[in-house]
Amino acid sequence: MSEAPVIVWFRRDLRLADHPALTAAEATGRPVVPVFVHDEVTEALGAAPEWRLGQGLARFGQALEAAGTRLILRRGRALEVLRDLVAETGAVAVFWSRAYDPAAKARDIEVKAALKGLGIEARSFAGHLLFEPWEVETGQGGPYRVYSPYWRAVKDRPVAEALPPPGRLRPPAAWPASDRLEAWRMGGAMRRGAAVVARHAGVGEAAAADRLAAFLAHRIDGYKEQRDFPAIPATSGLSENLTWGEISPRVIWHAGQRAMAAGARGAEHFLKELVWREFAWHLMHHFPDLARANWRADWDAFPWRGDSPEAEAWRRGMTGEPFVDAAMRQMYVTGTMHNRARMIVASYLTKHLLTDWRVGLDWFEECLIDWDPAANAMGWQWVAGCGPDAAPYFRVFNPAGQAEKFDVSGAYRRAFIAEGQRNPPATALEFFAACPESWRLSPAQPYPRPLVDLAAGRERALAAYSAREK
Image (cartoon, rainbow, N blue to C red; front, side, top):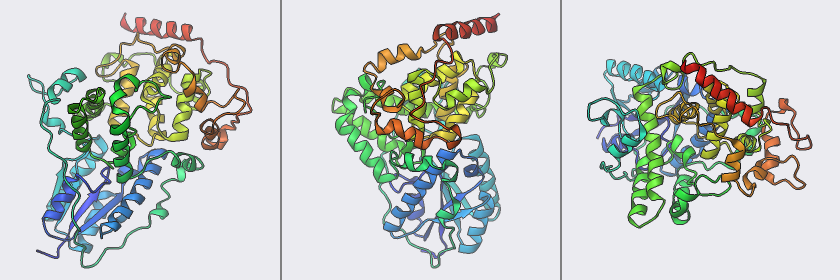
């Protein structure tokens, strides 16, 4: 054994179990220095994702301390910080979990080349996905562009068993200096909304494990039938934990497989949703412009509207369409939004309001604690009609019709819209405590009139679509 340590650079992988990079570092027998760098990629995060990352780092730091080690925090450009840490600690290697979005890939390529140039072992490991994007190809070669054949291609592929958490990690002879997490003020941009969202977040590896266990015990059997009803707690709630790597997809995959073998009716559909996430990352790896450019180039001339007062009303949950507004307010209160509701608010913005999908994508990136670069981009393009495997543009979700089908009792709308209720629930009132003070909103104000007649908005969208085809 040697006293020269291995640095494990954590990013969106804040866990101990099933962490290939950490396991490999432990296997060297060398001391391990866990590090998180508030770098150029982190600097670009929206308010809610940055706040949630800060919460995850605090919890992960506690978990490392319980395991007999600690998390070193540094701020600056990733390459410069890691180069400094290598010099300070005498580290001979830097290990990390692979990333697939364009900004992270560019950063990692630069870091790996520079460290290797210094004679430092620089290795990236799998861990964020079930399948590396370049390992899944069509029969003709190249990436899949449609989900259904992608699912068929991977559903029976072997997935390695999850790795156990490491034993007691060897500490270095001397610890390098660390920043204080509080000094970074990662929740600063959230302002008063942070305290509200904190009541609904499930932060950390232990919370993720508890969520998965509860889902398997009580909800997976009815998942397929109930998952589209936002007032029913039918889903796993694991999206924020997956986003920050507080649970690995392999752990979830094998749990779902065991549930399916035991006869749980909703298990296969649950696994399909996990693979939908995989498909999004598969696309982003192969098509890095997914988050900024229309997937279908023939949509470049579509007459999208830019930002507008109507889009601002949408952002504020004040469109006058209760299902849309309830969904937007859920996002401010909980930091997340039900998946059916995401489709409805995206359709309303891009079709009834003819607004560019990137306006919505950017706002979700600012407000979601489970913001996932690939899933967010694919979801917005899918609903708008310009993306891969997209919903046809003429499929316009009618918020009122969707409410009649998926919120029959109105429970979801009442949960988040206080106006007009004699005794609104806490969640409905929390919206007014979480939203920006500059909006000057109050539950005593009258609920707004609809921005647009739904039938007229649909016809306008279809007319724009027809004109595009000519």
